[in-house]
Length: 325
Ligand code: SAM
Ligand code: DTB
Ligand code: SF4
Image 1 (cartoon, rainbow, N blue to C red):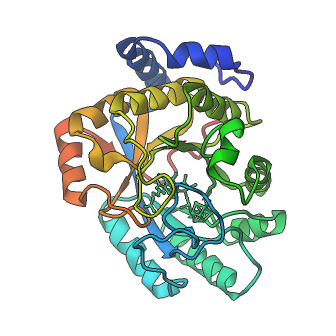
Image 2 (image 1 turned 30 degrees about the vertical axis):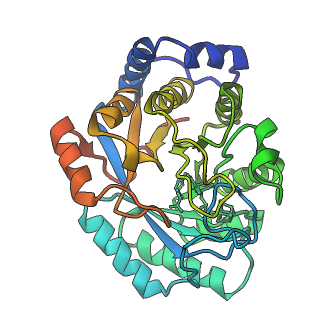
Image 3 (image 1 turned 90 degrees about the vertical axis):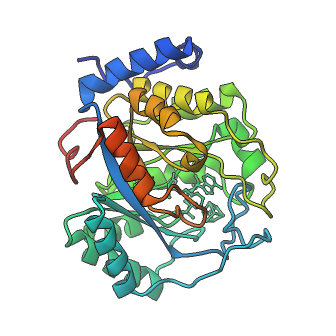
């Protein structure tokens, strides 16, 4: 088995990222099969439990209050509605259920108490429960851990250098601090980013450098392709060509071999054949269901057809719990 490294250099990652595509896919696939069962892909389900009205200015995001997008603002859902959605997700083969809230940060109030109840209720259903609620303090992370939370998603999104072109209302450092709070509370870390924000290849490499040199690799690394949304500053950005997404997935797989690499936003625009290249290159998780948080995703039945055609099998919950990253 190759060794998990935390001392990657930008040059090394750049050499990997820039390999001829088929060679890169083969090397990543090789690495993938050393640490994971090829063809096993986790189905994760996403639910926006509080939508829109966010005070941050993330320029990709349709949920920022300051941009005029077509989304419907919605207050925090009721716990029983969330449990129903989780039951449906589980019935559809999902082993992970991720709840997202358009908050800048968590506040210690009744809404947070309700989220803690949601976490307890869905955890009792034997699913990996994930939340993405914005920044957390150490004590909030601990409360989530005490409620049974399995994972927390908090993306670094891009390189430190490019970050301020994309978001001005918080710092890269803030994101890293929250990740540390999550890690210290013993919660599984989910952190990745977005390509298609107008970043350079160096920024993409820089993002992977930051993630792969964390003291422990995130157990899950979502790679999103920007979904340009009307009303956001990045509405007119060009769609990311599929080969760049494959490159990103493959490089993430090689530098963080034991982590789950999640093929996240952007699948709607990809053919089954293009997604197949991502699975060959080490992607082993998708978000299924016809909506991500606010934007469309492939129909559930289409994804099941893709699983059938490619011979993919859904991964069970907690399968990675004992793997060292
Ligand atoms: N407010 C919390 C936060 O920012 O961490 C949680 C929700 S936020 C919508 C979760 C992640 O979704 C972001 O970090 C970003 O990576 C991703 N995201 C948001 N809008 C996107 C878009 N238009 N295209 C692709 N990914 C997007
Ligand atoms: C992640 O990296 N991607 C998901 C999940 N984590 C929370 C969110 C994608 C959101 C895409 C835009 C939207 O649907 O609002
Ligand atoms: Fe708010 Fe999260 Fe959207 Fe940024 S990405 S505007 S923090 S919901």
